[in-house]
Image (tube, rainbow, N blue to C red; front, side, top):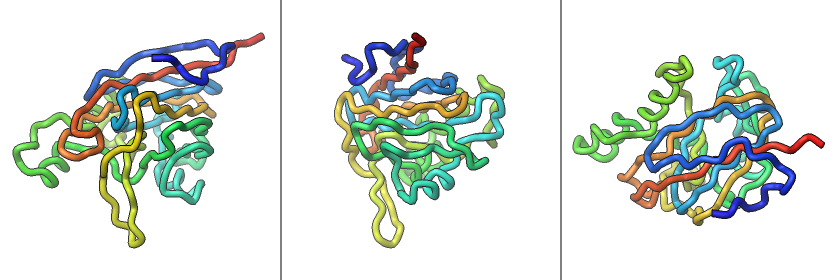
Length: 213
């Protein structure tokens, strides 16, 4: 797959594929750009951010929505921490629709929503716990998350539901880090609602930075 719009002068720090249903994490340094690519389209990418040198400072959906006065994340969004600081800024977005209200699937929520037959299916919360443990984090550190490429319409009285995604193969979102951040991703394994088109697929993550001259 071609990496669109990355400046010729940029240095690629990391370029990797996250398999379908899998967790992933890495530190993005201040000034670096994190690109998440929906390689096949209609794949939700559940994401959390933590300040790399103080993991008690972490992503806040409430502060992020309040700062933009918008229910969704897209170009220009300031991704805010629970301390009111900007963690990353969205500088490019070919999809234009990213949720931060619907949260992450879990074994418990799957059971409630889809029946006892789904109780033991792998879920995003379990992915987050697996990856968080590598960084000394635990269940109490998993906060409400971002859902890149997930389509969650909100009606006039505030009800929302997950519906078919609108992202196309190769759609991406770019975020420039305003501090060193630890990024945790669960490449969502959900097969019971249309957030992944009922068929989870791999996504691509690229970290790049401007070259010094």
